[in-house]
Amino acid sequence: MVLGASVLTVPRALLAQQQQRIYRIGMLVPANLAPMEAFTQGLRELGYVDGRNIAIENPWVEGTREGFDDLAVDLVRSKVDLIVTWGTPATKAAKQATSTIPVIMVGVGDPVGAGLVASLARPGGNITGVTNLDVGLAAKRLELLKEVLPKLTRVVVLRNPTNPSGVLQFAETQAAARSLGMALQLVDARSPKEIEGAFAAMAKTRAGALTVLADPLFISWQKQIANLAMTGRLPSVFARRENAEAGGLMSYGPNLTDLFRQAATYVDKILKGAKPGDLPIEQPTRFYLVINSKTAKALGIKIPQSVLLRADKVIE
View 1 (cartoon, rainbow, N blue to C red):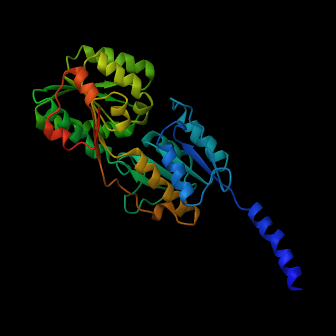
View 2 (cartoon, one colour; view 1 turned 45 degrees about the vertical axis):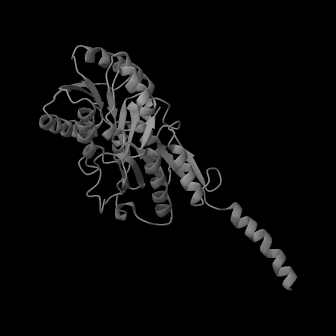
């Protein structure tokens, strides 16, 4: 009888394994974004493997984000178990599309100010995740430009006008400019074609440097922006290290890889039954200063030793 019972337990175990639920994760994140690997790796470390117990669905076409609202609606209609978003516009689209499916946001500068959640401690509703504090760092980036270029008096600001966070970032940049005695010139761009027009407009401002406000598309177009800044002889500062690595002069902000790894822990908690509205929104605890010395040399800029000593990475 014992032997018979043990024989019967084998197919039942196999059947249970075969019937293991596959959770469907909808992504509003570019599939080619390098930090996405940190997200999938984080999931693997927590026991979630794409194709085995999760299925990752990503409709975001490389280099574009056209029709965010439609993409979010399509994910909701396909009945995904949760949605992961990158940036304020994608998160707003998910919020409009559903009030029930959990949404995990990554890289939203000010989720409270953007009207996405009630508070960082108790978000409420169906949205939680990781903020990048980009609004609070916009002034710091301007200060870095001033430290590297003490005689700097005029700075051009590149912004994506469709990103609500851009309005908040620019307001802070304006306040910092006033305290530093700088004049700002705002230039907007929301597509690769508009980027070229924006840099043509910058040439007429006679600005001494460029600060690029944080936005997912400005990472997607990192090479184009870096090349245009170099052509225009504009020292530049960014929110993301990817932009400095692509040829920008400097970047200061949280590491996207860290943020996406954190997002994986939210997936685990929610799939295990936690309510997103009860999960506090996490904030980055470390900010990275990256300096591209190759770009500095090409522009004839000598980075002060005081700045180099604070850098987390110097690209030679």
